Image (tube, rainbow, N blue to C red; front, side):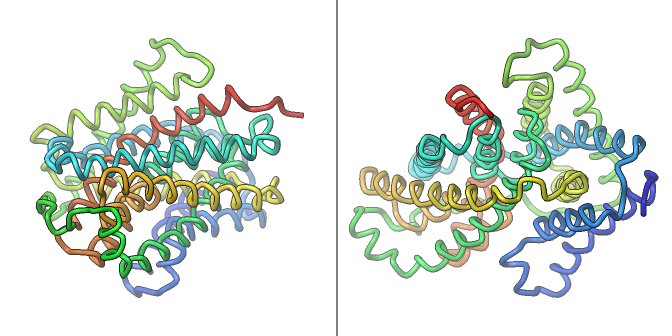
Length: 385
């Protein structure tokens, strides 16, 4: 049984790196259903429940530091890859699809929360708020919302499980509807997706070890500065010092994204590594308490996606959006930057960079969207027992 810090950290890093390495080297179909980040979370959760380590004061302190400093650093690195000017150049039609998708998810989350409100009393609404951050941005936004609203690790497990299972099913749906595009576009009166300008992604630059050290230093400095400035800003029920730190780190990253420093390689690779490490640390604090609530959240997730699809189809008819852009915008929200280019390539290869940029825009907005939903849900939630 592990009770000291260094064996614990070594195990977290080994498991966090093992599944991405297997995916890259084997290409097993398992990873199309359960991404490496989900397998890392499930594996470490299982080991935690099995009692492989005890949460000693030393380990508990390290977990707190890694999460409180790691999440702002992670968001800073993610934002470095976001070029707002390139997103603006996508044009009004593509951005209109994105805004419509965001609106459809807002309607869906609010409607499902009101429908399920009798079973979401107290703090039981929090997994849906965290999920909303993920389904506009990604897992990093989900964790950011979790930290900002003070959600427990047990409830995070419900949010991650709902995210993984519903997302996997939604990917299958979006891939399978491609053949319906001609009929759908005739019904909506949409232009062909091939008319969308081809937006070039940033050129790939070889990565060297010095770049990793520099970006890690920048990220940790941004996280430290964000935490220090947050202590000077006013706090309220939902907007805490942690919330301010997350928002400030996001802003710092967006500023750096529009400087020559953004062309320096390494931020993307380091953000991927840091994300899976943070998820591993969070999973190591998990247990199966409250697992009986999982079916409720899974049903809520299915209802959210169904309402989201219905509202987006209605908006596509009103604004003449085509099926390909609707599918890409939907997965850019629900699936993030990893899955969206694959779907876009299966639709039409010129849409791949469009999918990437929309997913990056989701990363920018995901935390704010999740905090907005948290504010609404907390105000409308019934008192807990």
